[in-house]
Length: 63
Image 1: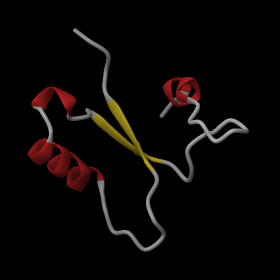
Image 2 (image 1 turned 60 degrees about the vertical axis):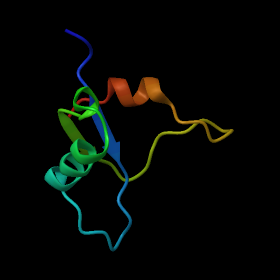
Image 3 (image 1 turned 90 degrees about the vertical axis):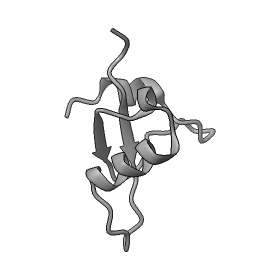
Image 4 (image 1 turned 30 degrees about the vertical axis):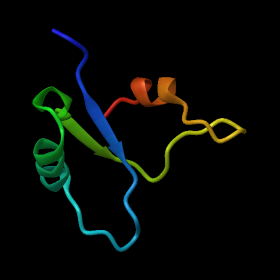
C-alpha cells in the first residue's frame, strides 16, 4: 500500500464547504487513487520566508 493521502484545505472566510463536498468534487474530477482519505481544514499553509509551502510540516501535523 502507498502513502495515506490527505488534503489540507484553507477555506475562504465565507466558504461553506465540508469534507464530503471536497471528496465528492475530487472523486468526480480526478482518478480514484487521487481521492484523499482525509480532508483537513487549516487556517493557513505553513510557508518559508520565500513563500514556498513547507510540505514536511504538513506531513508532521497530527490531527
